[in-house]
Length: 160
Image (cartoon, rainbow, N blue to C red; front, side, top):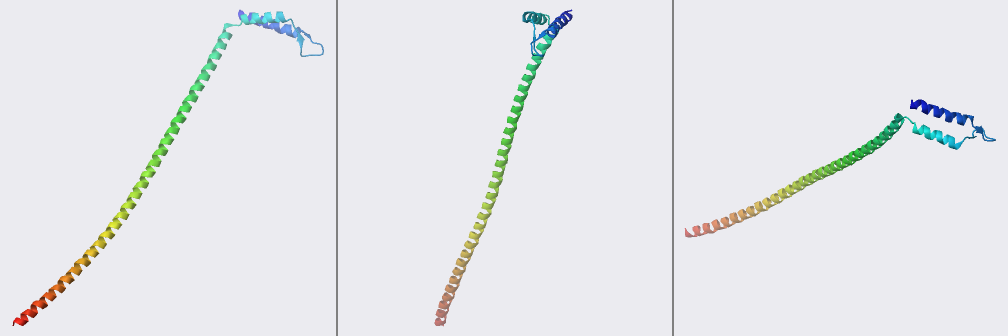
């Protein structure tokens, strides 16, 4: 019933505008009774169907819900990006630490090889020096023995 009343009022407003006199020298502008037009509009708004008002409030609630969902979605995306950046940073730190560790292992192995080579060379030189010292000592002992035997042999020859 109210819908038909609203339609009647809208038709009356439409007729008022359509039948209004044109402003001189203008086809687009017209003169209407302001008070009568405003009264019609107030009456239309007063009889506006509750469904339209409900639809407007539903539309406003939907708009707010969409805005809230968008904000929450942006927050989730921002959080996910921060988490991804953190994981990438942690992975980069892990890779760098792993690389440094492998580098240190390689340096340690190289140092061990160098130390082993130096130890081998030192041991070889020490053994050569020891061998020479023993050889010299043996030569001295052999020379001393020969002298001793020569001395003992000459005393035995003189006793005979």
